[in-house]
Image (cartoon, rainbow, N blue to C red):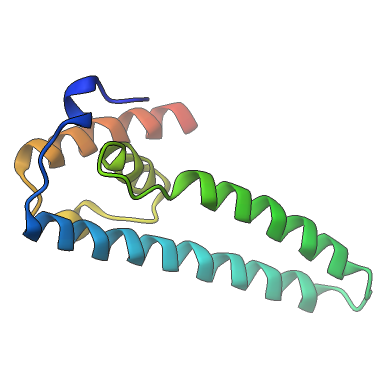
Length: 118
């Protein structure tokens, strides 16, 4: 779901920008850590040295996914946060301090993503 044109023109206060950056970085770190755990699981589950090619393929796919998903432009940040909340990489509590309008948009869009991905 892409939020409407109004969300692209939202103003972000300095305090909101700090909250947004911290939440964005925390979600990114969680997803990277999960990818690392998956690589370790793959490698530990098989003594076959050819498994490194499976790891390479997994990492290439994960890197593309992460690079596409994590976009810190304010014009798309509502959508990014909504997707991250829906996927469980971020919680609404981590976004507390954002204007209620932004939180409402994120919550509504994350519900959409949750239904879409179910």
